Image (cartoon, rainbow, N blue to C red; front, side, top):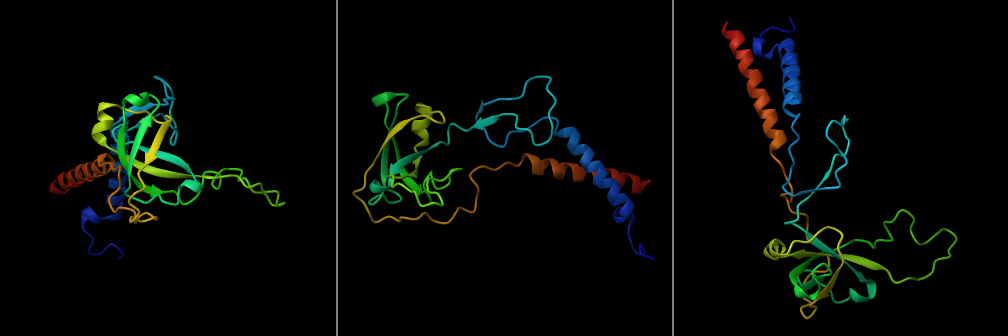
Length: 206
């Protein structure tokens, strides 16, 4: 009585078998790991022949064409910094031969020490005033990055032109479209559903 009016394709046993088929199909196809972004392999921990468990970090992928700079300015230097101000950056890897151009896109909501594992202040009140540094994010020109590639973790000298001070101090809302996205996993699920529906349709025809 509970299954009255249910079609064969929507039968619980068929749907359970379809789900098992989809999971098996995905497991077979996902033996090849697809990267969500294009970039360069860094910090590889996996080797040929190694056994891999779910959740294990295999390697890092660094998209060198979409890098930014986090400039740790002193808190006494942030009074006139606004979002949108032009910036020049000289990386130590190239010295003074190459100058990158960019603009300020945001300021961190807290200093590095505030989010550290062991903050500077303690419960006893023995807190010594130390000039803190606040990360300021700077977007770079992609064409200049292509001509003179940078690496993650390099040192640089950053100069901000603070003549224009009509910009905002706080960043705008996060964009609705993510910076990095992949269609690889979703496409596999769609293909698996289509294959399962094809198998069910062939069996119903018989």
